[in-house]
Image 1 (cartoon, helix red, strand yellow):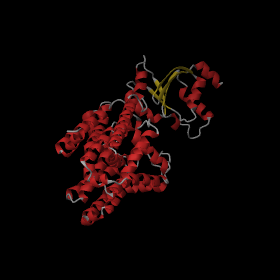
Image 2 (spheres, helix red, strand yellow):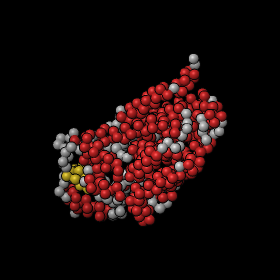
Image 3 (tube, rainbow, N blue to C red):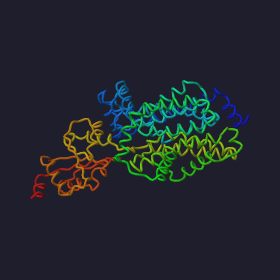
Image 4 (tube, helix red, strand yellow):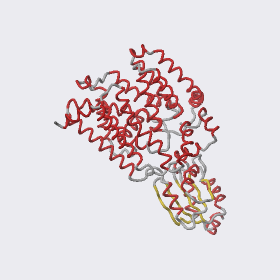
Length: 499
């Protein structure tokens, strides 16, 4: 029996397929949990702790008020923290778990599209080893949960259209409603669902009542959100995001989906992925008929992948809101089209398809290794430990920018006097900065300056410049995206400068 025959027999066996999916799921779990505490918490993750600490009444009220991208996540995090505590591992574990469960769910999604078991297995393999999805499966934020929730909703939607019963309409409505409160941009999927339904007109015509009732039911959970979202859009308020042209949005997403956060491969991985993606979208051969890869299926995936980024671009013309992670729920469409491309390429050359898959897995594993071999996020853990190990520990810290005090306090075990670093990006002159710094340091002889994201607070580095001119730098330590500067303010030197 040849290896190819053995492979085909295994793929035709449901039990063998379950075993393969179980193994892939176990690999996904290990890739997400083995280094779950490898990165220091960054400020958004610490914010998740802070926001979930709000009184329950405020947390519930936050579901219908402007101010947070994903209020439901903080509400759900509250009881989880009560059970497990606030360690890095505990805070990130829900994301790792949901990112893992989304792998077998991806197999179900592929099968629901009418694709073969082979396609489902390959899809699960790409989801399990994607550096991008692993990164957000290791973050104490809502993005893995958002990806999982939207995938559940899509599976339920396809099952409902295929006449699998009223229960699936209910699951679709529930999962979609939850996604609305999971992230501000999740409602963009409504346009996808509508177009997908219209594209499957024969099925929709048979189930139009369930379809209309379901979409009507979704207006109720979305109504409280649309009020403040419309107000935000009409006001043109600045959300702190830069504007990206549509071409740049797509380029960023492609780089991340193909190489991970470090984008280490340049154009190599992108060219391979784009070739397979375009093959999955347009290539037609005998394998397409055998795999039942129809125009409707390709169109469904294309709409899922392209409509939300285009909608974000249109919104951003008024209020810039683009961040790649906000659109994490479109990644299944991208990887599934890549899988379709692999299957169609296999019809022409099994060797070439095998080499392409092998290269993709090598790229993925290298991306995972690079992401996990050292700190990428601001390393407040190492910086705080550096000062905690000093004897005695520093008594006065100036943090630039001040909002990062919450992240610092998560790691630093000792009490200290906190001084807010001056915000100078509002155009403060050097004279104003000098006066303010003299007032803040008048009673000090010793000061540690904690610097991170300095460009967002003091782009001209006026605070550091003043300290360099009026104090003696006696120590400094640099960590990933965090720097520490120890200044000794000599009264005689300062008095002479004032005179």
